Amino acid sequence: MAVTHEVERKFAVDEMFALPAFDRVRGVASVAEPDERHLDAVYYDTDDLRLARNSLTLRRREGGADEGWHLKIPTADGARDEIGRPLGEPSQIPPELLDLVAVRLRGAALRPVASITTVRRTRRLRDAAGHDLVEVADDQVNARTMGERTIVSRWREVELEALVPAGVDVLPAASKALHRAGARPAPSPSKLRRALAVELGAPDVQPGPARLAASDTAAQVVHAYLAEHTAALLDRDPAVRVDAPEAVHDMRVAARRLRSTVQTFRPLFDAERAAEIEAGLREIGEVLGRPRDAEVQLARFTGELAGQPVELLLGPVAARVQESLLGERLRSREEALAYLRGERYLGFIEALLAFVADVGQTERARRPAGTALPKLVAKADRKLTRRVARARRAPAGSERDLAYHGARKAAKRLRYASELMVPVHGRDAAALATAAKRIQNELGEHQDCVVAQTRLRAFAVAANLAGESSFTYGLLAGDERARAAATRATFDATWARASRPRLRRWLRG
Image 1: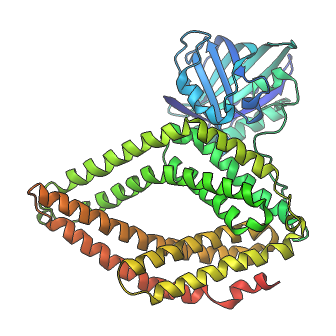
Image 2 (image 1 turned 120 degrees about the vertical axis):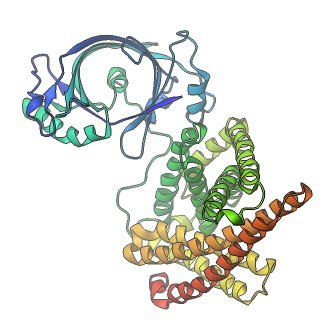
Image 3 (image 1 turned 90 degrees about the vertical axis):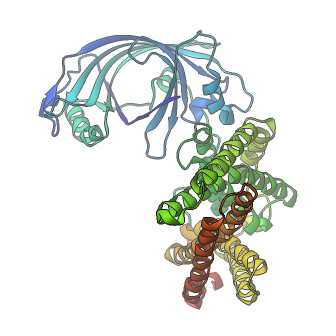
């Protein structure tokens, strides 16, 4: 699917508005001759406008160079990704686009909600070399809603869109020129929302307040963190489906943060519901973990093999690694997609949204955050201390490896719990979160070494059975073993700094 990253600015103008002289804008050397297009679009949504409520737009548009089906998804940088498909039949929404909004629809049907016709006059702003930087679209818009209530409206707006990365730098100056000419920010981020002219309602996840303090309830603080990472989970869902870089990792991290929060702050929740949510988040993490782990190991071994002298690469080592891990990644990715497309996952998302919205039902959740939450963070901290002590006492071998892996999990839980407390305890909580993150990263590298050794042993066995040399696998396994030992030595110094009492004074009130 074609994916375009859109960086735009929209402005409302009246019928008498005159565009400024854009060739006087810094970074613009010339303005191309205007071009006129006629665009006819039908927008689709559910009866309760689930897509619009979550800032998504799905339309079928005829006319213009990019006519077809377009799905627009907001991105973290405040812009949007536009995913396009060919026109096809008017009533046949491309299944690929339906797949990308499945987590928002959760079984609800789509229907046409508005028809918008636009007469668009465009000009392109160019640099000194004649390269197009920004498109200026002067739109005359006629809109009509479709359904029980019909609203007819008409307006004019101007849109700036960066055509290349260099165009993004021109947008501020071009926007300033429009402001000076009398343009004002558009009242709605999209034509559809302006056409609907109704209160859309809340998005799937209601964010917490912009500011939190120790006097706010524990429920308010925990809800804000859960809402942030539930939104991240939903936002990364379509990115996983199109196999965007780091999408699986980001969605998996969001699930881990949520699960860790439920575990650490369990006394604030209904026990039965919390157990259900924890189990569902664990399942998401496991499903996404398989393709992610294969991807990480493939990158690790590819890099290590590239750094070896040619004379030490005996046999088809790179081919065997690629075949095994790439095949595993592809198979596990298909399994992950099948899970994301299943009713079990979508049903769990409904349960998760209800759970996050209902935080605060227990008596302890209604206590001030400054007194109720530090005790639970301190409990996570003590658990980390116990697990590190156990790992450092454990005999060499699998028992020690498992113990360090357990310590890493405890460090991760402490990190997320401390992050949750930053709005309440500021730099003190941030310092403990940073220390826990450092521990997590170092023990994560140790675990990667352990997993790599297991993989290499399996490769060596397979090579021997195929009559190939296993020398290179043994060499790499020795490197991983040495790296694990070095990581443990580095961790000892890290733990000495991270276990200082001053990092935990805020946990004692």
